[in-house]
Image 1 (cartoon, one colour):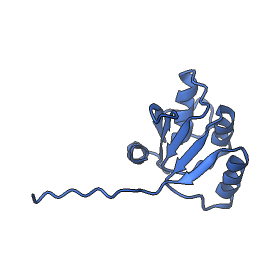
Image 2: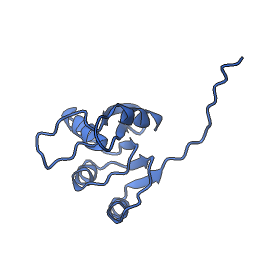
Image 3: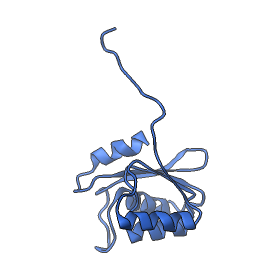
Length: 131
């Protein structure tokens, strides 16, 4: 998840976000960040999830049972459609859905048997430069 957060820092768009897609063994397949690729269609979003999903399709990977780690909750119909078509199994998101639109998307994902879970750090890393 921290890698998705780091990718969002690379973004130069108004709403930065990053996304990693891994397989069931948690090996990275693709990653993307908002603004990384220019969409060929102006109706397509350019968020980190969309970029990573586009790369996944370009790799000819079927996406089945993959896991998405993202710094923002998927909130557009384009990404939702791709996630459902690729049969992604789980989405870990940093930010919780808050808007009515995001809550509806959450319901649709869960109705399609896609687990959605807010990432909660389990460890605190501290660095002491005084020793």
